[in-house]
Amino acid sequence: MKKSLCAALLFAAMVLCIGAQNAVIRELTGEVELKPAGASSFSPARAGSEVAQDTIVSTGFRSTAIIAAGSSVITVRPLTRLSLSEIQETSGTENMSVNLQSGRVKVDVKPPAGMKANFKVQSPSATASVRGTSFEFDTRSLKVTEGRVSFAGSRGAPMAVSAGSQTHLGDEGKAVDPVQVAEASLQPPPPAGADPGGASTPAAPMAEDGGVDFSFDW
Image 1 (cartoon, helix red, strand yellow):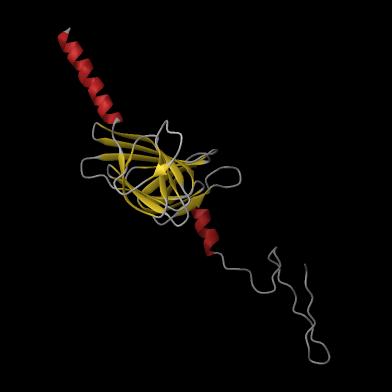
Image 2 (cartoon, one colour):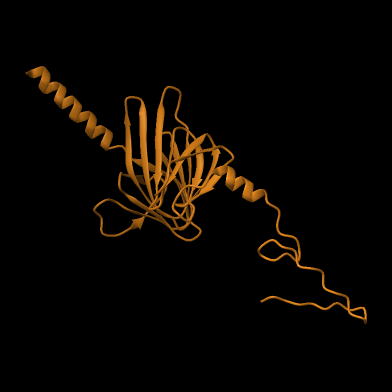
């Protein structure tokens, strides 16, 4: 009986310890504010401020914040609002979830040897999840600089995006294939005189006095 009680108390202590983990604002510039869970208003943040679970972080115009959370570093770009919905470490694995309400973030996830990290950034329209990588996400588009990211919209299957690739949400809420995004970026601009459909407009005839007659489609 005593052993069972001790085991239950130990488990409860471990759960409380996990739930108490906080992130810290390592650096900031400009106007950065925090709104802890249950608070009615925002208050100014400073370097060293703790960011507990479900605390909302908001950056103003020309303002940034660098948040360190375990082995992950989140760079919060200007005019961004987010909250850390999960900060846990258990059985050698860090679990981090960010709710990106608006704006853009850059995430670097680099767990130490022997440690695993599951990092997820979720917006109202898409989700990016990784295990050790570096990427930028702005609620609808994703750019991966290191590692691999699983990206999914509100519809369709998740899309694997590797380093050096990028994707975004299509009109139907599905993730666009990174190969299609790359091919579109390599297409040359239409030649001068081409209409929007891609057909070239015939050259304007020369007038008898050596001038050129121009016609415009408005």
